[in-house]
Image 1 (tube, rainbow, N blue to C red):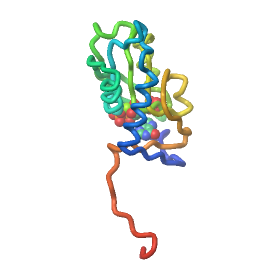
Image 2: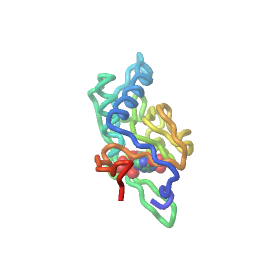
Image 3: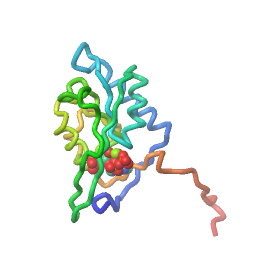
Length: 167
Ligand SMILES: O=P(O)(O)OC[C@H]1O[C@H](OP(=O)(O)OP(=O)(O)O)[C@H](O)[C@@H]1O
Ligand code: HPA
Ligand SMILES: [Mg+2]
């Protein structure tokens, strides 16, 4: 977390916004697969990639879906990523025709690791920050590096005091 916090700004994403942005991502990816425009499968990077992956799979009519789990570790300031669960090797090959999906790219460490494993895959995220942008092929919305993106699964509705009448 050391390099993740504190952040100057917050970008709050509702379920509705995420749904719209993931749909927009699917329109951008439609017909761009290597064989007649088709994608062979979607691979979601857990856990954040699972929700966008479902929406893309629905929009693009892709029914072969697998996952890759990447865990980040802190070793004296340096964040290292490690794969703790991979997708089916027979499905993946070098990644040709595979759409690898995540919710966002931040420093790019996660995508860097997955890219090394599947260099021919297409990497798509809904959101991107400048540092990670070179590692993603297609994304929808960019936010600055000092912005923390708050996803709907990490939030809850809360009571707020009226503008007049607090304390
Ligand atoms: O570009 P990076 O700096 O690597 O950061 C981006 C990754 O970090 C978050 O996942 P996290 O590792 O927090 O796990 P989660 O998806 O299970 O929440 C996010 O969902 C991306 O996968
Ligand atoms: O901005 C972010 N929001 C949520 N999770 C994240 N993981 C890396 N960066 C972020
Ligand atoms: Mg993640």
